[in-house]
Image (cartoon, rainbow, N blue to C red):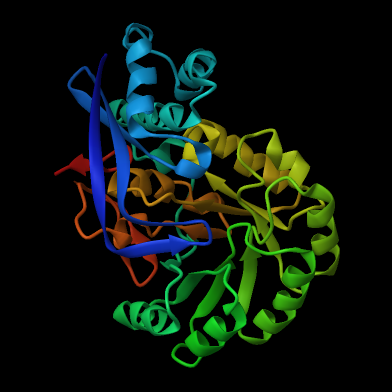
Length: 336
């Protein structure tokens, strides 16, 4: 098996702002694994909050190239278990590698990923489309630019209620709110009351990640469901979220790929938590992998490729929130 690494700097259509940063470009690593005439593809983007860069991911993968390239006949679960000890401090790199190996494995089996996992796709949820923080006028303009059934609105400003009040005047779409750790307990509880009146479905990670007593207080008193994101990074975090959140948002890059991501989803279901998978502004490579998890999800945020001014791959397509799969096996991805 041959390992191929490619670095990209994905240009966004608009400056993308959340409560802690603004970006115009998204650095991304594409991992390709070649074996027996097949190729599998995986992706992980950089993220300053998690102190992860593309050069470091490439460096860590190069260090274990000889180990990776000897692992040809394992299942994805066996491959992940064998590689995890080498990359336990770089889950982003592990994600891209796991995604590529799982894609390769499915292509060799001549199956799409959801077929490999015996999932049925007839009840797939729709994806939301994200509106980053900007002036109210710009946020309204972004929304009008792409009419959509569900919007995920980034908040964490002093004008949060005013923003949603104005956006509501221009659409009947479902709203989801992501404050990216930008609120406190009282602010979250009070905002939930007003936001519920404005047609908001749930709040995602309104407070800082590790304030568990505060999360429990909000869990008890919020009139809207609370979904964990920054508080739910790896598999061990799922149990912690029980009775502190109403659901979890699994990010494949944070947990180490599709293999642990699927385990997190199953654990969440056992605990009665709602399940969601989110993206980290990946290209169609990463987004197409997420699409095969849809049958297991209540919600999904997989609009990353839609935010790009230019994509680097073909795979799944999205029309008004609905995902259509490629005719190709595996994740269905082809690099342009």
